[in-house]
Image 1 (spheres, one colour):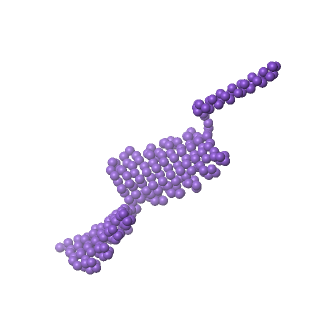
Image 2: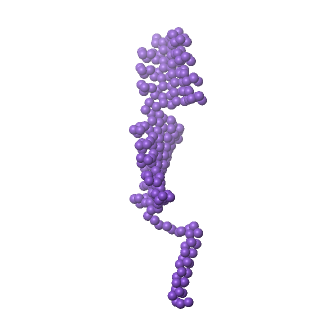
Image 3: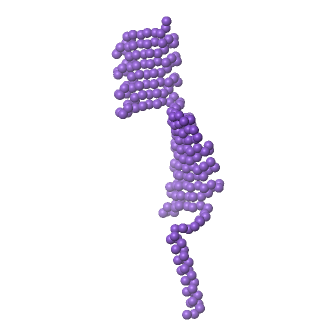
Length: 244
């Protein structure tokens, strides 16, 4: 065997040893430290569906459907981590993370990125707030300074329904801005009403099952107390005034 043939065999042996070493390394499932500027995940057609990268010295992760804009974005921001979800128009529809005040927050938005419901927590309170599309708060349910709280705004109402889905009670704000409380029977027919009259006085009004008024107790236009009883047909039967 000449020197030329020996050299070829020696080189082949070295190449074989190299591939054996790399194969053994991969089988150990430990590649050590890997440093990259970005990492892409592609589907079977080569379209990018995931991207791990850095932006402005912050790590980011985006997930997308092939050929579309990212629908999930994970950021590391100055005040903490945050996860955004986007619709196909690239509007933010949800947010989960830390806000600028350092609070944990979950925001649910409409299709134009307007928040409609926000779960948020800070040192002394936690709750759910709901909003109109122009940013006005309509309700809050949660804990404030250690006490449970339910608050409704902008002529808000609270309704309860019975097992048949019929309205059983109604508590809220009337058109004139005063508070009202209505009760209903099992068929959803109004039986009592407590509220404020147009003149600003409070009153109680009762009705029978035929929705006919049977009783009235309240304040008249002269700000005197009055009480009136009616028969089953709504005709006056008895009345009294507190005026002397």
